Image (cartoon, rainbow, N blue to C red; front, side, top):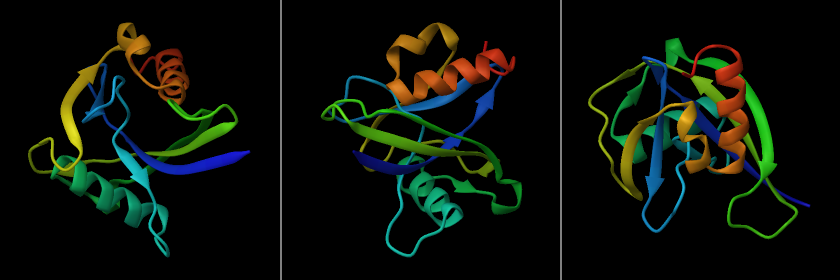
Length: 132
């Protein structure tokens, strides 16, 4: 079994969650990505969010939001994505950059538009009353 280790940002405002769609992709993903050699979770989160959304994560506000696993979207069966999620405040204006084609806010009704691991996260956040 192959495991893709990713770090993701959970940002909820007004009952909707921040999501991104990369160029050439047909589903939305929580912003974030894979760590580079030697990076810890915080460094990965800060770098990825700056690269994708051109905003600065406020390190003192970062709090763990859970780790979730599912079949990786668009990958061979048996390829799992393990997403370690963090909530955090940020500074700046959210702007699609790098590989990001679109930035949007999704509600629970949009669950079918996201990757399998994000669907699990949507379910948990909806259950907890955070995602409308």
